[in-house]
Every structure is written in structure tokens, then in C-alpha cells.
Length: 370
Image 1: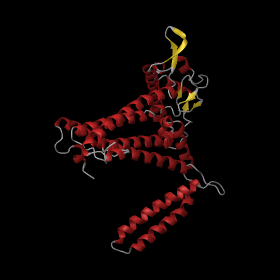
Image 2 (image 1 turned 180 degrees about the vertical axis):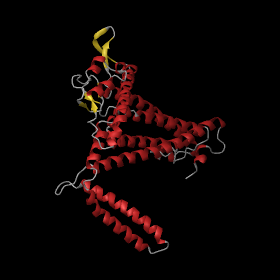
Image 3 (image 1 turned 120 degrees about the vertical axis):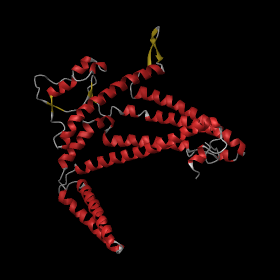
Image 4 (image 1 turned 90 degrees about the horizontal axis):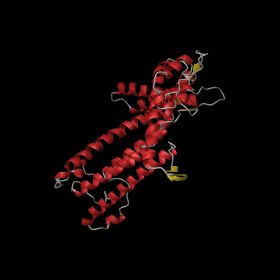
């Protein structure tokens, strides 16, 4: 496979496209790093969710053994790695069979040892998992598993963008292969421009759909001068609803984060996440931000705890004023904009590649044509 510099900046290309080629190359490097970061974050989220889930399941004779199985696997992995390190350090040219036997025996011992701590950490892990899923900022995106799902989508779109930059995106090139060499470039450029237009239309369609379906923006409204008839609302009116509700959603995210600052040390110490905040503290927390700037003051007032019972406990979890609903999964609608954003990036990448081909700084052969 040719080096990146050969693809984006071959000899003889037009000088005016050099900045475009360098910009595209820098963009690819950034996206490659983002892919690595997103992948690490996704694996970490899944590992945390599986670990807490496994540790939170107690084992009883005749009951479920998922918690015991997890502990046995952890013990086997830990002892196997320890045996591998010790055997490798002391081997110095020794027989590889002894090393394999040592690691295998250590792992077998770990499987048995899992039963020794079958009940350890159950309460702590269960409390931590319930807090992350139900009363932390992560609940706004569906918890740890929901976060991993959204990171998977982001990773896929980053990969699609990188593939587009390098001409490795999925395409049907049967027709292009049979064209004369001189016609392949213009045909590929035309295909890329057409694909960019389709992506742009998809961006508008996705945003419009999300505004109506997720933000409940009005699709129709009484016609001006004829209120007995209904007319379609404008795209700008729907975007205004999105902007307003997005601002309130991020306000709630900030308020939940302020609660998490106080909940986290208690959860790490093993205290119940929903047993520390009193009604008096809840009311003081409500007074600590400009709720009226985003929600109806009467609806905010309805969230107040009963002043006659200031020591009654409240869960440190935000709810949406005026709806009677908690904020679980609230930010998923914002995260859904990753789809139109990804399409917009792909459209721009297609246009950049078209410009590089026109300038002679990228090739449009059968392996890179759209």
C-alpha cells in the first residue's frame, strides 16, 4: 500500500491544493488518535460495567453462579499472570514446558480460589453500580452500557471518515474499472460530489427527524392568518426548539455533576448512595442555580422537599421539572446528533478528496474511486 504522502501529495500536483492536502493529512492523524481514545474509553466502560455487575452478584448454594464465575476468572487471570512473570524471570533459558505447567497450575488454583472470596465486595459493588446507573451523570446517557453503545457508534463514524479520506470506503467500481484511464478521474469526482450532496441531504433529514421525534418540536402549527388550518413549521423553528431544550439538558447535566461531587466519596467509602442527602440539603441545592432560566418556576418549586421534614432523605438524582420524570437517558437525544454530524464530516471528506484529485494531488484509480 502506498505511503500517505504519496497519495495526498504526489509529484506534479497543483500548488494551490497543497494546504488542502496538508489539512486532510492532519485531520486523518487527529481522527486516528480519536479512534484509539474512543476505543480505550469503550473497552473501559464495558469492563467497568461487567466487573461491577459480576462483583455485585452474591453466590449461594443452589443459586446463580455468575458472581462466583467472575471471581474465579479474575483469580485465575491474576495468579496466571503472576506465575507467568515469576517463571519468565527465573527461566533464563529453561524448558518452556515448565513455564506452561506453572501458569496452568496457577490458573487452576485461581479458579478454585474464586470461591474463597465469593461474598467479598457484593454490597460495595452493588451500591456503586446502582449509583452509576441510577443517580450519576452516566444515567443521562443510559449508564455504563449506554455509554459503550454511543462510543461504538462514534467509533464507526470515525472509521468511516478515515476510510473516506483514504479512498477505502465501500463503493461499487465495476463501471469505473472499464472506463478509459482519462475518464476515471472525472467519473470518480462526479461520484464523490454526488455522494456529498446525498450526505448533506441526509444531514438535514436526520436533524429534522431528531427535532420532531426526540425533542418533540412541533411539525405543524396554525397557519398565519388562517388559524383553522395547519401549516408545516419551518426548519428554523424546529432548530429553535432543539437549541432551547439542549440548553436545559446540559443545565441538568451540570446540576447532576454537582451532586456527583458529593456522592462519589461516599460511594467509594461504601456508604449507600441514596442515604446521605436530606430534604434540607436538597432544597439548598435547588437554590444554588438559576433553574428559572430554563424551566417554569412553579414546576421547579414543585421539586422542593417538604420543609416540615428537613431530615427526610432524598436520592441525589435530578429530575426534569414539570414532567414528573427523572432524567434517565435524557442526553441520548443530544448524542443522536452523532449521525448527522458523521454524515456532514463524510460529505466534507468527499469534497476534499475530489479537490485533491482535480489538483492532481490524489489518484482516482479503480481502488479509490467511488
